[in-house]
Image (cartoon, rainbow, N blue to C red; front, side, top):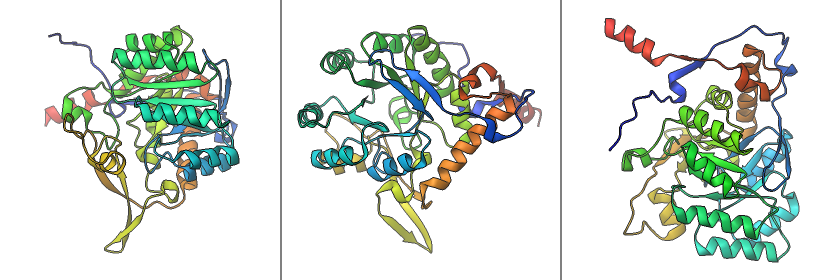
Amino acid sequence: MHIEEDTKLDFKDVLIRPKRSTLKSRKDVDISREFTFKWSGKKFNGVPIIAANMDGVGTFDMARAFIEDGNGLSVALHKHYPLADLQTFYKENGPDSIWYSIGMVKADEEKLAEFIKAGSKPDKLCIDVANGYSEHFVDFVKGARERYPDLTIMAGNVVTGEMVEQLILAGVDVVKVGIGPGSVCTTRKMTGVGYPQLSAIIECADAAHGLGGLICADGGCTVPGDIAKAFGGGADFVMLGGMLSGHDQSEQEIVEKNGEKFVQFYGMSSDTAMKKHKGGVAEYRASEGKTVRVPYRGDVADTLQDVLGGLRSTCTYVGAVRLKELSKRTTFVRVTQQLNTVFGQG
């Protein structure tokens, strides 16, 4: 047993301190990024925000909305679409804004192989598991890199620098960072395992950038300011789940109760997801997600405007002309300790 005494931080524990700025308007800020991925050698140019590969978020309709938005946003499609539907979607929309998602089960591998064999090769691959610390996962990633050397691979999830380094050396271009911070994830409650998300981002970004790799902050963002904090902490991409739920693009039934409209949203390790896609929760495991009703929020375009507008505004407050500069211009101010002190004085 070992105890780390250093303080670790979540988004709620800090604010970004403003700095003098020469920017006259939010419209002068460039929130796109340009990356060349370490292993695939391919380039990315766009706003580095990704819709999570969850039911109700990583949908075809969400991808179409992101493409129509025109800012270079991307969507990690959930892995439960039938093969024929995936082939049709890629044919009609192309691969540029899409991450093809798989887990480590054999059926996912076979479906991807068939998808590629049919000539519908994806451009980007998201290998998504709850626990990225197993040797089996690292071996799986190595195998994927060997089989698909020209694909950009994002994989995770992990929360520590040493594992980020191992995955990058195994062939991952973008490491997904986050265990337990998601709004419908109960991993921390069920297992006691996790890591405060902002500290995870800061530490993992440092490890990844030292090897020429990138990270994607996955989970924990509930408001646009959290997205800015993630980028300020060094994240290259930010993945959103709950913030994008409840929209027309969720492809979920809209339920009306007491005059209000709701949409169901659930974690992909929840009872709901496992019953829907796997027939139930396996006897050797427990649910690590919950199911909630979120208010119906209409078209996702309005939410995207809030997200992108908030990010631009953050940049104006600290004088970052480009999103790339945000992490260099960010100074985090601890707020929770100050609040505790005030409350303690009673």
